[in-house]
Length: 169
Image: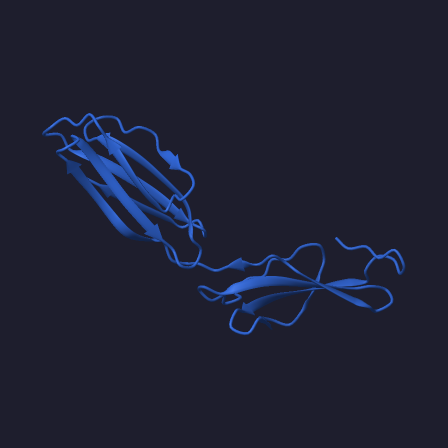
């Protein structure tokens, strides 16, 4: 929403989806500017994976003067995160079962990791959300029943919201 106290409300708005080039700091228009009325949805823009995009809105007041604004932008990420390290180990010296994991996502980072640790054949507990540094963690269970099979379910999401599920046995 823009106002102009001197010449009145803007005469018109123009919207342009723009790709940002980090190599030289330039902006490249994806399509020609489109007249805009408060909001806009544009389909079939052919956005590229790992591309950084912003919206540019230009207002033209009744005097014909232009003001241009850029959105914060967004990153296109169409791939799930990648497990870097997944392992479950029984440590005989402390009689504990240790689960270790690490995730990576070069485009949009790791947004969240949830886990649950349980013995197969029992009711799985609810997921526990890891906070702060959720891309790498170690969890342990100290009351291990020998001969039982234990599982750790990992449910992770990257910054684009794409889920990844893994079960360690």
